[in-house]
Amino acid sequence: MKNKDDKKKDLEQLKKTLAENKNIFVTNYEKMTVKQDFELRKTIRAAGGNYSVVKNNLADKASEGSSAHEVLGALKGMTSLAYTAKDPVALAKALQQYAKTNSQFTFKAGIVEGRVIDIKAISDLANMPPKEEIYAKLLYLINATSTRLVTSINGVGRNLAIVLDQGTKENKFKQ
Image (tube, rainbow, N blue to C red; front, side, top):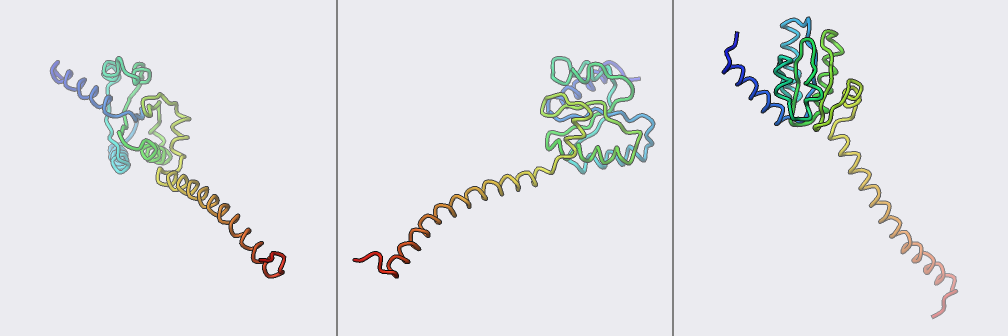
């Protein structure tokens, strides 16, 4: 049994974690084996996240006054948090992939960039393309538009040159 000072330290640590990480996935880990838990932690670390098991009443107290209180205020059952300050898509993909192979692991809710999301939104987030792919598509669209503009501008000058050239060959334009 923890003493009062240890409980206060745990509360402060969880408050700090919630303040530093705006991307949090609340999960249920009931009936998972130690081996499955080890694999889950390994998967989360590979995705750039962290994982911790929390007591529901501690999560309730730590989230008071924050946007996370809507999700963490009324938890039931065994609860764990997977969180990151980096890319939420990578963590969501890793968690969803793990959930496909381990039916004991389920989502309860999530918070992405301070906004509460439901289980369907977590699935949608996990199905998004990676950030690098989105950047590549955006750069392609920007580049394609500028390439078409330059081609159009050059086309007007080229067409004018062709008309003038044909005119001089046919002697329609006399000097």
